[in-house]
Image 1: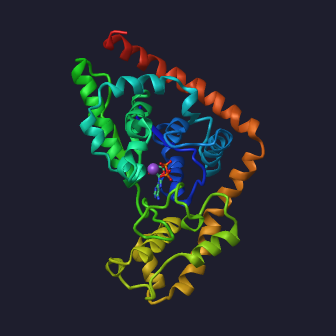
Image 2: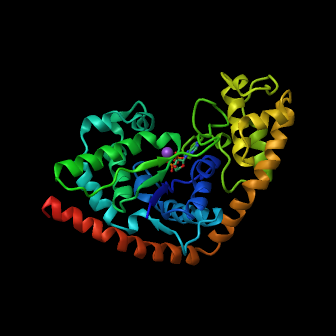
Length: 329
Ligand code: ADP
Ligand code: NA
């Protein structure tokens, strides 16, 4: 059977981009795949996390999965650090991946910023851990936003080199699953940057915990140009902020961008933004409400994570045993 692995970092500020680009797709995948959905807390600590906040944010990611409709009876929900096989395989992959491969990762360059010498080694080696997350379950497919495609390519390279080096066909070549409209949601303050948990501006993102008033305020403040919406999608070229808002509308309404423009062509943002607010409150609001409800009962979420860890461990153990055998451990 085809198997999915996907994860979200519990680094706080879970946002609409995480929902539209990742989490909401998790639900439908349960029909056709065996799914493992992870709060990747070991990835999160590649940059400093307050320990108490990390623990709570890990629960919050699990609660967001549940709120979006992931069924813990069918799918496995885990915190990465509770299944040590991820870390064990990651070390082996650290020894398979080449420095030159990691040097090409654009996300490291973005996240490390100007002060590269001061970035953690973990931030640099992060793609090797991601490869281990996926391969420790021999996952065949990973639903990814555009931003993760390069890391998935690296996973394939590592798997292939491991198979070659040890003369054993252990790891499958994982395939990306990319979804329709607005898989890349941009910052509300700057159309050239993706919406992100780590953006210093709270106005850059709509979060799972935002209520109607804050969604309305953030969209009202969202940067745009002064022109009305165009008739055709081509008219959104060179208008990144407008394209982003139309893309978000399209994704929330399950429409193409063109269909959204068919409805709003010629409308100014003073009309479009309130319509987008209503839609976001209708489609995204209830997910956040349910997440908050689940967070009020941490023991329930923890029990689901505990059961997930046991099931995940059972899947990972034979893979790790196979790997250790060929490596010579
Ligand atoms: P972030 O970059 O916000 O820290 P993660 O690295 O934890 O988010 O990514 C979790 C998932 O959410 C990944 O599948 C990623 O592709 C997706 N994702 C993150 N940001 C966005 C965005 N702005 N638009 C679409 N998908 C996103
Ligand atoms: Na990311």
